[in-house]
Length: 304
Image: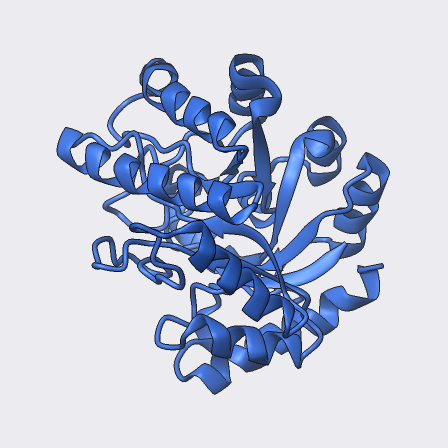
């Protein structure tokens, strides 16, 4: 395994500086945030563009790979997390167009993973969303295959704010959904697994990794804390509103020894990428870096 980080929190730093810091602090991989360089979606922890994929050439991609390799860093994948199943057709077309550019760039650079979401329309039920997904996502999967890239969906329900409530913006969150995904697209797709999303859904982590571990092609390391006062106040029907609190590794409720035990049993030997969404460590880069280092020290004993 290799320990790394997702570059999204460093929105005001260039990629070379992020890689320099990461390499000098015992990280060996980066998942590179690739939102549109021209701007666009600016939800929390979105909008960072560390590689401008518009018109990227193979030569430019090779130069980026070389610059990072000189700092002891490899690229675990390119990350772009929009909502390809958004209710607004114009929005869908815009984000799918950029997602395809990210996939093309990954292929040119020899990067075999692009991380994203299946998406979801919060006003539709699961089966209605699934029908739409089979039509919309299939051509994207084919484009990834033709580019030599594996499209990896994260298991995040994307329901952190009331504009995403009640159904969330990503249907790939449950075992039922993941069975359908792999039945439909097989090994052309993989899972970008984040254990924090299981905790507040009360999905058993050990069982989940046992079933889906062989399908995991990329892993996010993020913790979550259940605020039991908030849960008492809002109830489970609030779908996490007011009681799921993203934390850095070791500061929440994820059982990290069980997590790594399951991954090793499943044969996973890929990147473990720290995803930083902890509001206690937001702000200036030095505070963000402190958070990453805290998470590093929790996970490092398990990375061999």
